Amino acid sequence: MRSHLLNDLTAEHYRRSVTEGVERVAARLAATDRPFTGVTVDALAPRIEGIDLDRPLHDSTAALDELEELYLRDAVYFHHPRYLAHLNCPVVIPAVLGEAVLSAVNSSLDTWDQSAGGTLIERRLIDWTAGRIGFGPAADGVFTSGGSQSNLQALLLAREEAKPGRAGWNAPDISDTLGKLRIFASEAGHFSVQKSAGLLGLGPDAVVSVPVGADKRMQTVALAHELERCVAEGLVPMAVVATAGTTDFGSIDPLPEIAELCARHDTWLHVDAAYGCGLLVSPARRRLLDGIERADSVTVDYHKSFFQPVSSSAVLVRDASTLRHATYHADYLNPRRMVTERIPNQVDKSLQTTRRFDALKLWMTLRVMGAAGVGSLFDEVCDLARQGWDLLAADLRFDVVVEPQLSTLVFRYIPAAVTDPAGIDRANLYARKALFASGDAVVAGTKVAGRHYLKFTLLNPETTLDDIAAVLDLIAGHAEQYLGESLDRAS
Ligand SMILES: *Cc1c(COP(=O)(O)O)cnc(C)c1O
Image 1 (cartoon, rainbow, N blue to C red):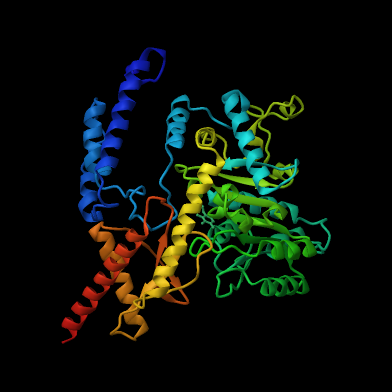
Image 2 (cartoon, rainbow, N blue to C red):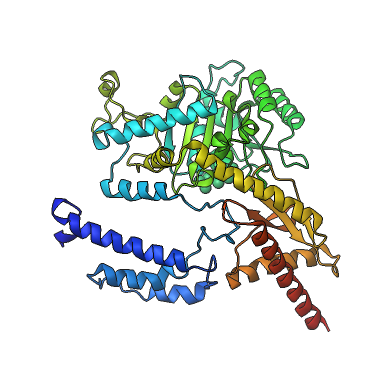
């Protein structure tokens, strides 16, 4: 069994084994003509259930053969131009190369003595990102597993900063503290804000939902009103979460106005740029993030708009000292004396302990392609979304919700023969399901004002306007087929 351990003696085995895996994936990528095979849970589950995990194959070629059947053949492929569903990007090759390196070397970024250069590379990338945001020299941050964890950590820091002793705080009873804290986020903000509030021990009413306008951006007049009401009721505005790229609409909240209100109320401003962070490197659209430099903390998901493999994310803070709220000194790992010895231990800033060297993927990407190279790919998909909007707006078969600031389109099919809103809902739900089952394309769905809509999230520069037009025709076809069949059933 020792021959399976990766070490000096097995370097050749490692090379052959991983190369064989790479070749399988390359062959599969080259052969995929649809984003999905349409496999069902019922068809796939017995195959996976049928594997006896206590009877190993003792051979990686055989295990790969088996994996073809269990996974590779029927996986959902984000690189396909007709995968238009969620915030999954096709990945860039330099990042995949970084992934291969980081998992083989297997550094852990919790402490310097488990990573050495890995820690310094991550720190450079944090400083680089902070610079792109426009933070000053006091900024810091850390890589995380994703936007949800970044949001949780940012809100933890905000909670600690909002503790008694702060100006405006007048709750003498500490047990009363958590129930009084309020977080403000737009109704189009990400659900991880609500989850975080729960994890942080805040009350069920802790997140105040601020309405959005027709453009799906937070209404700052409403935010001002809610902040004033909060203070008047003796509650404490703990944080405002502005979303720079809402998950559904790609809408960007008005950052400068929100920053102004946060300054007035001495409230933490968190900018959730999980989706919109690609604008930090966009040659054409960086100004859409103007005002982000006034945030106290920022979430960026490189695995969304920087074309990085999952996971790659970070939370950035304007003031490094706020990260102390995530610090715990363990004798065995990162004792306090290491701080005075200036030994860089990233665990001092992280919610995780053992942590992947995900930063290497971004490093390789920037070293090979450069920031503008990545940003121009994101610009391409934003341009495509604009053209898709024009197409949809001119097509009487469809109703499209909001002109895109980034790269999503939310729309629905409006059958000529149906006026009943529930019937339109059913036709759209059916069309999405039927399209998925066919594997010809994958689209997402969401609700707008209680009604069912469909969504394209465009993150693939290889997707063309022809692809969009073709998928719209497929959707219309499935919806019409459904309506035809339900007419048959009725008669
Ligand atoms: C995707 C997303 C998140 C969550 O990020 P994960 O990496 O999926 O955990 C948070 N906020 C916004 C706006 C997002 O789009």
